[in-house]
Length: 208
Ligand code: B12
Image (spheres, rainbow, N blue to C red):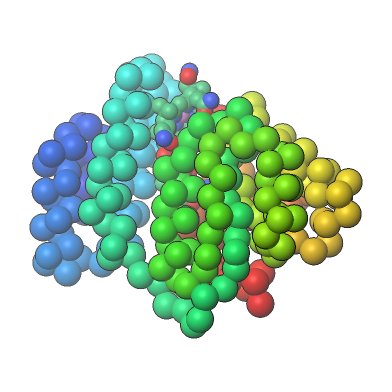
């Protein structure tokens, strides 16, 4: 019930009541992961409404802000288990793409799982990603890609790593709504994470 209300309040872009509902759900010990899933369902529905012409760009922008407000409350509660600190993992949203909510959730969950993260932000060119991987000796790069128009950037990163002779030293994992494991492999990535939970689990394995 509380979870359905969370999805609904996000869909209505009602930030104040959503923040209140997230707080009270956490106080009554609703699993934070279930709260995150309810928020993610809301974002999917918003995407569908945008696609069908019921919502416009203004609503997309508001949805992004509303989700961020809710996630700020949720963040300290999303603790995954893990041993000593590992990493660093490089995270970035590919060039041409400004979506960062999913990447930021993955970032927070990695940090709480004891994995150090270097976050290069959004609209990130391949050269910057490869340069950072070299500078920090990163073993894993995680790329976020939400747009079909720019997801080919994953292949650009893969090719740049190959050109710099470090492709064999680093694992490339990707995520974002339009992707799948098959597409990820087509673009030259090693793995794909459907959500942040799976991302953390797979990145932890890749770091072993
Ligand atoms: C919010 C939103 C926006 C906001 C973004 C705000 C922000 N700061 O991020 C704003 C308003 C800026 C925006 C802009 C645009 N958007 Co937009 N947006 C969305 C929306 C509704 C939600 C995205 C989101 O935050 N989801 C919630 C998070 C939690 O989920 P997530 O990002 O998928 O991340 C999870 C997993 O995918 C995974 N994951 C993500 N990254 C990674 C990385 C790794 C390594 C791993 C392992 C896992 C992982 O873990 C995350 C957490 O569980 C989507 C719809 C959708 N269903 O995705 C459309 C959507 C992505 N947008 C779309 C479009 C078209 C646009 C615009 C082009 C619109 C326009 N005409 O200007 C612009 C593009 C701007 C740009 N250059 O990037 C389309 C893309 C269509 C396509 N086929 O490419 C979508 C699918 C909407 C739709 N159905 O039409 N958008």
